Each structure stands twice: as structure tokens, then as C-alpha cells.
Image (tube, rainbow, N blue to C red; front, top):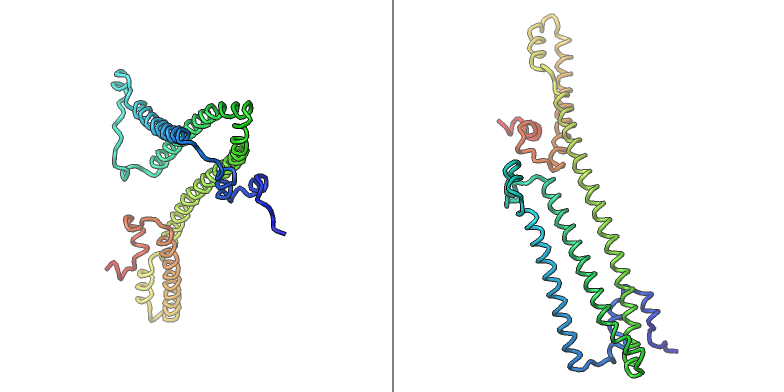
Length: 269
């Protein structure tokens, strides 16, 4: 047996399929008069103008908070003009500026959303009252009101999911910055250990053993064998340090000590 049309309750149970909610039978059957269509167009234009005005007012308020200073405060503690070149800012300053801008944007979005919701409620009150007291209007508006409520529930759920996603994104970004700082510390510790693990005076030991070759021939050969082993071990450790430094993302080309570790002696020569 063929199933009947999907009810609003079944559509609300599947909020991810928003396209079905936007093309319901009541919506398709509802026809607007030319005057009503003109009113809705003007309402959309008004909403866009209010949104642009709110953004401009937020920018103006932010710029005025930096430009309005008392003369006495400027004389005592002059504040340098902000550098327009972002490359001169540190990572902390860039992150702080991005966080401030994101906070202002969210505040502006919340204010405009609240205004839009309030105005929508005010504009929809009169048609609802007419629908209650007028049977003909009730037949026309009642299905749309029910569908509007379903869409409001879906919108609320999507807004909650978006807020949770943004919170998780902030947590991941904070953890990523912590891991970057921890990685830098580990690279510095590795460099320090590599500096401490270098062979102290290998050439001097070889020269001293060569001067006593007649009396200490056996020890000289043993020393040469140990020197060869230590050189091999040193090369292995150096290769490991080179891989860690290059893979860590540190700008080793600007540090003489890191360049000495990463680049081989033959390459430097």
C-alpha cells in the first residue's frame, strides 16, 4: 500500500533534510497577492539595510573607542599608532586581534539576530490575530503557522549544533597552540643534548696516541677503534637531530647553531 504524504511531525524528526521542509504542500499551495509580495520584498530590503547599519555602527564604535582620547592622557602615556603591516606583529598580538574581531562579530550577529526575531514576531502578530478571528484567514494562515513553528525548531537545533562546533573548534585551536609550544621546547632540549653529547677533544686524543705508538701500539689501535665507533654514533645522533629540527617547523636557517647541526661539515665547507 502506498504511504500518504509526509506529516510535519515526521519531517521534524529528520531536521537534516531541510529541503523537504521548505517545499511543503501548504507552502506550494499558498499564493501571495501582488501587494503582499511587495510588502515581503520591502521587508527583506529593510532587514538587509538594518544588518548593514548594525555592521557599520559596530565598526564606527570600535574606531571611535581608539580615536577618542583625553589630551592629558595622551601627554602622559602616548599610545603609538597601530602598524598597518601585520607582518610586524607577533603571533600573540595577531591571535589577540583575531579573537577580538571574532568576539565583536559574534556580538553584532547576536544583536541583529535578536532584532530580526523581535521584528518578525511583531509583524507576524497581526496576521495571527486576524487568523484567529477570521475563518477565511485562518484557513489560509493556519498551515503556514504550523510549518513556521517546525522551521523554528529546526533552526534552533542547527544554531545549537553550530555553537557546539565553534566551541570545539576553539578548544582544538588552543590545544594546537599548546602542542606547538611544547614541540618548540622539545626541539630546544634536543639541541642542548646534542651540544652536550659532542665528542670532547677527539683529535687531541688521536695525536697523543700517535706520539706514543711504539709503547702504546695496542692501546692506540683500541683508541682508534673507539674513536671510529664514537664518530659513527655521533653521525647517527646528528642525523636524528637533523630530522627532528627540520620536521619540527622551526626556522633553523636563521639560527647559526641550528644551521651547524642541520648542514653537514662538507656542505658548509
